[in-house]
Length: 275
Image (cartoon, rainbow, N blue to C red; front, side):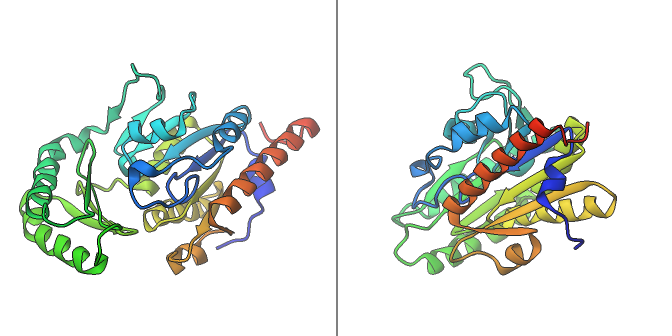
């Protein structure tokens, strides 16, 4: 990967800043409902929005991500790129589902119902439904690796019959539509929609690798992009070696956000940004 300086990317206009939530802007917690944005992040995002286009790109449903962030004027991209909204978190917000995903709404529901029924006896499993498919969290189970194997075995054949895809994150099994839509493809769509000349992406999980790879691919075509990986104790090694920069835990990411804000302010004052 060619070396690139963050300062050079921040000088591009239009500029996009794209962030995952869980493990990036919010500490990892036992259950999804307990997650909260790290103190000060909402204010930082509001400030950053005066310099750049801001997108929140999450595996959560777009509405759920917006409920956590509670900052208006951002683009909320949910379910790994299947959901888009420009006017969350207002109650009247319109959420767009990419058309090719519509045929997988009901199959996703059936698979999640199967897990709820067959794994009801297991304490600690949390089934999180989304517009298409959903997430099955097992972090709180007494024997998480054993439960993981049970969930995967339970879903393997039904998922094949339903035409759905099973994937994994950190102590979570994902039920997904079999579409070439992931955070990497979503990032490319966002860049195209906003006609960006530069982008910074930050994430911490295996699903964020697709976005990091997308930036690498775009750079080979002459686009200006930069990627940040947030390191946790269980971070995927490939994520850390593929990103342009690694920060330690969510506090490290928040500090980097402050530095990005200050760098953007300096660029504006000096006039050293590219229109």
